[in-house]
Length: 625
Image 1 (cartoon, rainbow, N blue to C red):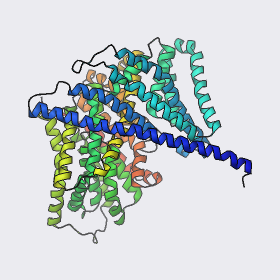
Image 2 (cartoon, rainbow, N blue to C red):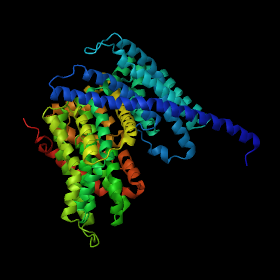
Image 3 (cartoon, helix red, strand yellow):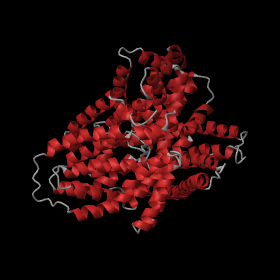
Image 4 (cartoon, rainbow, N blue to C red):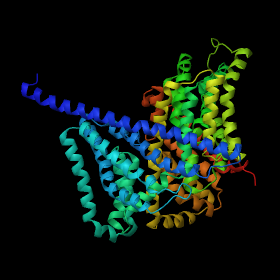
């Protein structure tokens, strides 16, 4: 039993943490409501722009400008929501495996790392916003500070939430040690400034390999680790104004093309909520469920179709697995094999439009998004066929005497219900190719289409889920967009250091030309996808490697397909691939059960990737002249 004095000492601590949790909840709600409204307003503005331009031939001159202003606020407030909900991308595998004592310290260290960056960046963010007060927008004629103010406001709110979390995640000693370690590392780097300046570009290893690696392995959010390393590199080893870091983050996360990210994520959530995703899965189950391994083929087909709509891998897997896994288990499938197939199908479908990764590539490299959307279908199909080969081999001796074959009438009925969902990818592609809407705007057409189908044809619309879906959309996109901004700043710093020039010289000097460059890129992006996740790897290295691909004679669309698929394999491959653990969480299967069966599927994906790399026509054959 505790003594009376110890018990009385616990009461104030518990009361204080309860008050802090209540403050966090109230402030969180105060941010979530505006960011949900911003998401809805962006949809309305962009769809109205499409209708005015294509329907009435009288385009709004201000719609893109207003959408851009609101987008930065959406991105920053979404980043705040994601931070509060702990949804920023991080590699937490080592943290979760640590003992309780070490885990508490690492959690405190992750928050302290975030606080260090936010404290350092807040001043430059305010300076950047003040500089924008001189700029007036061309159409609306309002000071650009109204847009740029989103950056210091977002950083200030995150700093507030970080302080609230730090007071709750660990004990007093953990907090002191974590903050002390961050200060000690910063002081050591500052004192070593003469040494770092003397070793030339080897100093990049200190900031962008050791410092970033330590932060990522400690479980700190990847975006904040990238941004902190960039800030420290520029502050200690250059005379660059630190507001440049803010301007590069601004540039990276507010590109108008990236507005497609929240809109397509919301479209995916809407597809699932209206039942259209389930209707497509039911149709494939009725069509193929009686075959040996039939539901595995259904899973692959469903991931191919759903990925072509939602663009969010976690949403794809969450839409498919709960529908199919119970029946697959009832037919004798092992849980480990199911999660292995789910993971590799996620890697297989990375290039299916409107993939968020393809949109990101288009935004950071300038490659046509319409071309990327067109080129992504066949490469994914090649990998899907490779996985089908493994499925056939593993399930060729199954006894299906107890499985009922769906009659033609049932197949026809499920097809009728699935038809609106099956038609949506073709509608999206046709709208982009025919010039009805841009790659950003076309998502609003899909949203309105899904809304009408759910309300009129299917007779239901999830009104009660609308606000949570808008908030979830903003949170996911805040996490994605902030890491794009941080990686953009980091890529700029690497370019200014001369690293990109040295990398280009080394890569173009490889024996074997384009073929060797492709092989090296495949290996590099498998590793990068495993360690950094997909979008950070693309944003960081895309601007560096795509020009080299052009220089050695590789078509940019072909190169994009190869590196995206390689990155996807790394993202979903154990032991480091976080996509694999997401699949395990969605399927409610222990990660240990899927490690052994996944290797056969991974080999099939590598074979499919080799075919895609060796046959450029699969990526560029339908692009036209």
